[in-house]
Image (tube, rainbow, N blue to C red; front, side):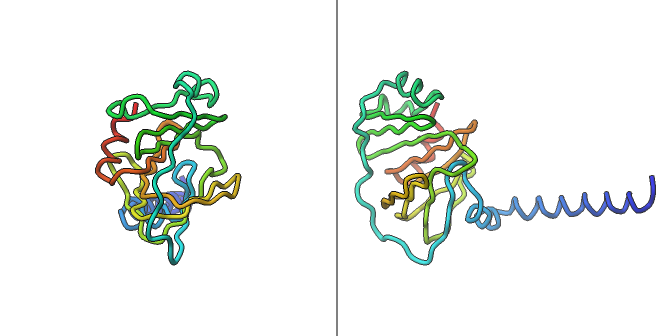
Length: 182
């Protein structure tokens, strides 16, 4: 093998190791989340944001989970510990469900993001679910409809091509519920 090719490969291998180390460092990982997507959610840091959030919106739909699966095109999951949701609605690629004070949305992670979260404090990486905790109220923009609402602190994670948004509980409870979602 020519010397130039060996040097190029060595340089490229070293560069990739360096890049991997930088991306896996927690502060850098949080920065990367600011300009990359978390599944179907795009995070954008803004200088200021809301200081309070209204109550988490409940779901008025009364679909069964089987009906929601047929409509959405995937099988929705929920934290078993919460029992059956009090409200379920669905559209193609999307399911929302709620319990008193808790809202779980799940949607297929497409090429285009579904939500834009405009937050003003640092994101917290949550290793247990490989997701991010938005610890303060923040603006939630439905990208396809341009509708904005203020969202409460939210856990966002991705599993098997589905993006999950869990809103209405504190971080510890959100992580516990996310880990029990099946």
